[in-house]
Image (cartoon, rainbow, N blue to C red; front, side, top):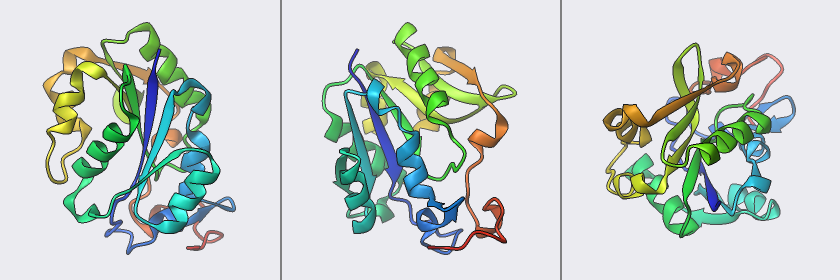
Length: 193
């Protein structure tokens, strides 16, 4: 099965004050942690959509496709579109956000494995029945993802197709994302890189 992955790393991080993905947790940047969580051996291709040159260079060292989102102000829909277009013909694509410091590769692999068993469904990690990220979408929904505009993401597509959603339970900490410096774990020991 041709499965792809889009690492979404082109946000403005305005609530964080900028530079969020360079912030370190346990000695590694949020961005590096995201790349390490990608289940690359299950993927036909991995596209990393970012704007910072340092991030694109690191993604190249992981041998991932790199896509420069030169207009991040156009919102998350542009990141989705650029990632899908870079991957080409896939049967399903996982969208992985880059600000979940404790997401484990094993959990992302399980989501892809569940999708492979149900390739017409949407698979998302969840805790206590509450959907989180990453999410895997079937090719049948790519036109709707490509039609998104502004700062509207895949959640809008999921809301239109809730009957297709399969949730994969995972520990709550894996789904935690970082929006502000105060949300950094162990923030007394963490510094912005």
